[in-house]
Amino acid sequence: GSPIPFNLSCEGRLPFGSVTLNLCVKDGTIAQAKLYTDALDSEISATVENALASLPFDFKAMSEALSGALCEADATALTELLSQEIFS
Image (cartoon, rainbow, N blue to C red; front, side, top):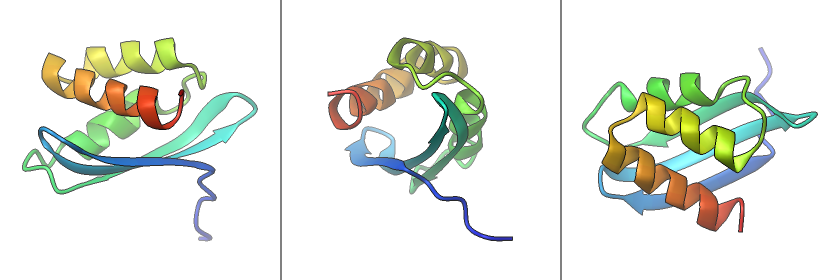
């Protein structure tokens, strides 16, 4: 298939590793999320992608989803990255 046209991206160095988060947002909804990371936790990419998929593109909704899916430290780090890079 053809590649997904991601229209938002952020990257940073977080306590658990380097991350690049790509989002495809259509009509105010996250159509797809893709997280690339060198984290030792091999499940974190799928966890983040599943948590964000189909959510409204809204900082509060995204941060609540991440808080429910990740440990507190990882959720806080990723939420801060979103705040600085996308919602600033």
